[in-house]
Amino acid sequence: MDKFTPIESRPAPLVEVGVIGWMRKNLFSSIPNTLVTLFTAYMLWIVLVPFINWAFITSDWFGDSRQDCTSGGACWVFVTVRWNLFMYGFYPEDSYWRPNLAFILLIAILVWLSVPNLPYKKWVGIAAVTIYPVVAFVLLYGGFGLDIVPTHRWGGLMLTLVLALVGIVVAIPIGILLALGRRSEMPVIKMVCVIFIEFWRGVPLITILFMASVMLPLFFAGGTDADKLMRALIGIVMFQSAYMAEVVRGGLQALSKGQFEGADALGLSYWQKMNLVVLPQALKIMIPGIVNTLISLFKDTSLIVIIGILDILGMVRQALSDPAWLGYPAEGYLFAAFMFWIFCFSMSRYSIYLEDRLNTGHRN
Amino acid sequence: MTNEQEFIITLNKVNKWYGQFHVLKDINLNVKVGERIVICGPSGSGKSTMIRCINHLEEHQEGEIVVDGVVLNNDLKNIGQIRKEVGMVFQHFNLFPHLTVLQNCTLAPIWVRKMPQKEAEAIAMKYLERVKIPDQAHKYPGQLSGGQQQRVAIARSLCMNPRVMLFDEPTSALDPEMIKEVLDVMVELAQEGMTMLCVTHEMGFAKKVADRVIFMDAGQIIEQNEPEAFFNNPQSDRTKLFLSQVLGH
Image 1 (cartoon, one colour):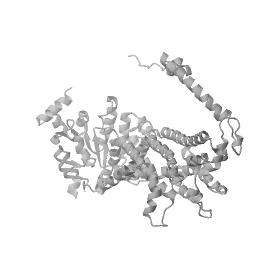
Image 2 (cartoon, chains in turn orange, yellow):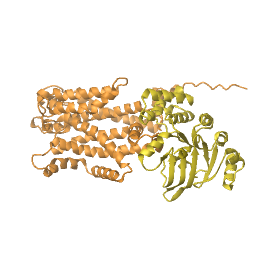
Image 3 (cartoon, rainbow over the protein chains, first blue to last red):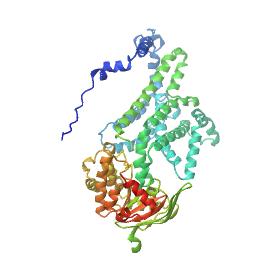
Image 4 (cartoon, helix red, strand yellow):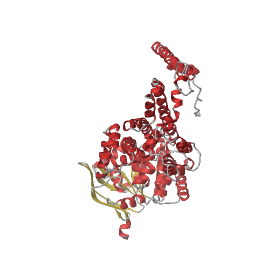
């Protein structure tokens, strides 16, 4: 009898895999494709070259007033002069170290959690959601010997980050609970969750913010009025948890029934089943959806300007109306857009990194 | 109590409906400790539903189910108690893909039995050796073949040290080459005296290890007998027809 020996695999032909192969396949595979490629290259050329020229080559970066903008290109002096305002709003200058420290701590925690092989991840994670918020609050607001900085002096990028982070960190757990409640077999819990979700999801964020700032105080007796930023934050959190709940519900539904049954059959309780089996898998499936919601939350924070709280975009718009600096809307909006983009893009990359890392081959 | 202990599972006039559809009709079944039962029948006959009622993955509406002296009702404590003692192996394995093989096996012992991790791991390795895949302990289920996954699923159930094992078509989703490795594990388990209820179409397995074969159709137990009598001398026409179709090629 012949012994069966499989033929050894050979490498693919070079035209299929190299740079040339890629270009041939994707850019020049046919005459129409080649024309589209050339046209796109031409359009990029006529748009990008003047833009780079304007933004980088003939631009001015340093100075104190608009008289320093002499090159004819972008006047980034507009931004550099107001850098502190854009970053911290009206936060007292001698206390800038406080938001800085809070921010550095946050970055340190995030890096710690995302670098593989660092020890104590569990404890760092727990500290991140328990101790860190308290520390950050004391640093930003004051107390324990630090001067109180009332929230109406907060602003700029710092405020944008506070709104987005609190929104994210509080909305995720509430959203998970709402999603579990909506799938619950207990009719009362289910109904409460459905009503909550459908109410907050059906109202525009701008209305919620407006109601939080204008109408809520009418219901309180004078003097018991909660902080304006706090009221806005509660509104944002409610709104975002309703959205989060629906994303989470999608993830729960994507999980096969067998996973629930496997956990049941082993005798796990409801919460053990959810925490150990269902949510770790569902959250992994939901990462793109969650990050999508978070990115849109991050950008929605700029709506807060309608109740007179100035986030980074609000600060930029206020600066644009300064008579001494009229005429630089392009620089101002580009800067604001760039700041938003950096954070949103980082979130998006981080989510892709997480998806890769949590990938264990097959889904159920 | 001693009388009840003789039967580890008792189903007494159990009825179940899906909406208007009557899936289980007056099911009576007593299972002795150490008994190995194979349940067969055409698809839709209610055989899976019946064994899924035993650990309350499905809820029955009428009748009484008693497992190891505990009455199965809507009391979560009783359900939990029963599920601890009853292991189940599914057609599609239902391993947890985000956990390694070892973690799959230690999850329930640690959280349900409150066992220390070291002890749970030692027990898990013992059972993984018994199903002949200790070297795969640190892989994820997605990296294993179907047959290996099903053997892990069996080991995972055994780690809870159950008094009864339920098998719900354990080989139906496997490639032909892998069925044997799973059946071998099940045969070994049967020879060690585990109480087993198997829904399966593997008639060879039934002949080899079963103490009793049950034939179900249309939600009823039509016939039950020792394997030899069941296969050689079926009483009902329905059973004869079924057997001629499964064995006739």
